[in-house]
Length: 293
Image (cartoon, rainbow, N blue to C red):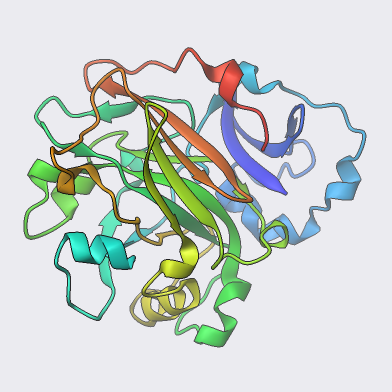
């Protein structure tokens, strides 16, 4: 199943993405106001229930929101691919972790804002995990049972504000693209064997496979849950492959007018136009790019 958060007719909603549009789930689960709340009832949702049901919205009738609009936590793993570690001369064997704030996110086909105070707005395509159950000190062998689904993430980095710490370079408004939707684990044959590709203006700039992670998904969940209890709707970003703009010759950074994409096999294609932080408008290509894949 593909679940998403969106705005329709001025109201925030959550729904089921199918081939020809979106089925609004709120009438079926009125006790849940958003997708984060709905995750506690996700086990009650069966795709077969909606076979033949008419969609409520076309994709071009809605504004996509970040998959989870206000997670309690967004915990990010950096330097988690071999090529990326080599680019940054990273040798620490322990997971490199930092946080994002909920208001630094934006949705599929919505503007990714380049800060006017930065000359180094970099792309980082990543696999996102969405937690579906409460858990603390989760054993590695049980980790996958706590995942509600997977999504694409553009972890935009403001490099010239990212010095000996990551926080200042990761939390500018609308610099993290999240979407288009959450794909439930039953549709992902092996989350540690997913192709991940980032494109800038149609040019491929990152390509790897999630099997290249230094710290795999189960290890990240076990490690993080040791010091911070996880709850439904929490998001874990699993790191970006090599090929980032900062380490290219010459460097390659995102500029207003660019379009950046993160495509992950079995999940879909997250697309964000890059805009200046003086503009906040929806991408005009919403119809062309919003089909389920």
